[in-house]
Every structure is written in structure tokens, then in C-alpha cells.
Length: 165
Image 1 (cartoon, one colour):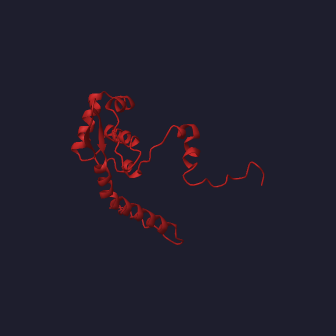
Image 2 (spheres, rainbow, N blue to C red; image 1 turned 120 degrees about the horizontal axis):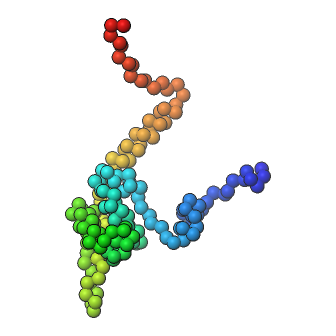
Image 3 (cartoon, rainbow, N blue to C red; image 1 turned 180 degrees about the vertical axis):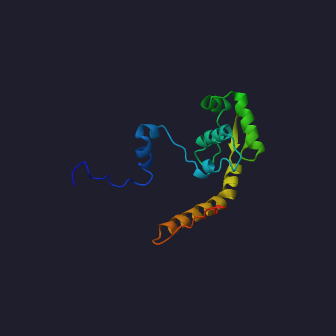
């Protein structure tokens, strides 16, 4: 085996996998852990692309399970290329749909500061639909396993006989 054919040793779990995929400099600026189910279930959850983008942005500010995110609307607006008012409307829609709950925050000497956002509604909605997606995934895996077995013949519907032939 020469230097060109040597394979890399396996990466330490969680240490370099993301850096190998995205690049060390990119990952050094931070990353967000997001369940794939949120992306896969966008249509099922009836989230339009901008609502999903707002949720993803909120998730990017949610670093700790015990501490809710509290980004400024202006920061969300800048990231999304929207006005503050548009962000406010999308968050209101997400709140009405039960994905987000706004919690007003106040500072003793400064008055109102950025809202805190409780994403437990989103977490609950994903937990509610997870069994359907898991079942679908398991059925697909079983079908692939069955198709890979030797001797399996797929039955295709026969074409209807041509009349008057």
C-alpha cells in the first residue's frame, strides 16, 4: 500500500466529522444541531420556506436545552433579509400555529428587551409525528432488505390485453 492508497484512520466521533465535511474554518465559526425530521416534515407541518427559515434561525440561537433563545428581531431580520416587521409577523404566525411561544423580557433599568422564544411547541410537534416517519423509514428499510435477497422476483402488473388483436 503506498501513500496514495492509504485510507485515513476513522475520525473520532463528533470531533472531526463536521470539520471533514464542511471544513475546519467554517465549523470554527459555529454550528447548529437540528433534527433532520424538521426538514423532512416541512410540508407535513405546513411550514412555508420563510417560516422554516425563521425556526432554523431561532434554533441557531438555542445553545442550551435549559436556556431559551432570545435573539433580537433586528438580528433575525438581518440574517433573513427581511424587515423587523416581517420577522415579527412570521413569529406571530409560528406562535399561532403552536411552534413558538414569545416570552417578554424586561431589564430593571432599561425596560423591554428582546423576547425569549420557547420552542417546546416545535419539539412536541416533531415528537408527535416522529412515529409516522420512523414507521415509514422501517418499511422502506425492510423493502430494501427484501429486494436484496437472492431469488426475489418483483411482480409487475401485466399490461391489459389489446382487444380485437
